[in-house]
Image 1 (cartoon, rainbow, N blue to C red):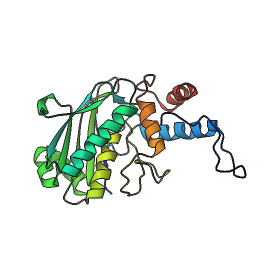
Image 2 (cartoon, helix red, strand yellow):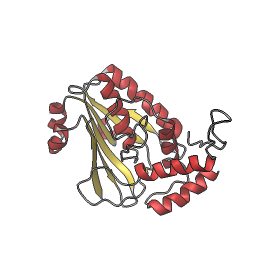
Image 3 (cartoon, rainbow, N blue to C red):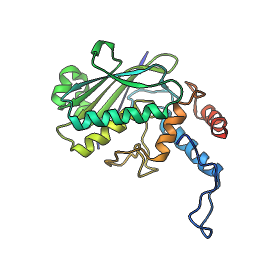
Amino acid sequence: MKQIVQYVAITFLLFTTLMSCSKDEEVIPAVAVEQEVINYFKEIALGFEFSGVNITEVTRKWTKEMKIYVDGEKPDALVQELHTIIEEINMLATDGFKMSITTDKLASNYHLFLGKSADYLQEYPGDANLVASNFGIFMLTWNDDNSFYDGRMFVDTERAEVAAQKHLLREELTQSLGLAKDSDKYQESIFQSAWTTTQNYAEIDKKLIRLLYHPKMALGLNANQVETLLKTIVLE
């Protein structure tokens, strides 16, 4: 059994046609676009940004329903945003995975706390160092087969403004799917490592979610293994 902390402070349908804005502009082959998505998947979906321990960089995801218990202040704007994010993710996943909200804390396997850091730390005092310098954190636990079975998350509603709260909610929850790294590659991506308040998925973000929660995506694959599998998936 392993546990990992990840935190931040601050359409699987790939293009199958040539892309250009006009006949005079450079045409980008579809295969190049697909390889770009594969490369980004490997950058985001293998391992974790911050761990504190040596974690094998392989694919991990939920293989059962994520049942979210919402705790803390529950601002209307964030709760509504949570419903929107869940609906989007459930539409993108095609391997049977889904997210839902439960009012039964004991029946949940993911604890989402929205509120002040002091209130969150009453339940999780061990996270004090992380919360001191971060407006959002998440933590995941997985089995030996690299399947997540438990997690928790915090979004600070005191230090972060509303736009930032919505961004953190989407980013941390999406990273809790197993897309746990950041990148400076795409400014519009929810995984952008620089501070942004992006509140929507970029098209490439949607593709990554579709790929990880595709029926053929396996657990425990390293970079070489997952590239081979991704190529067979995108060719479909």
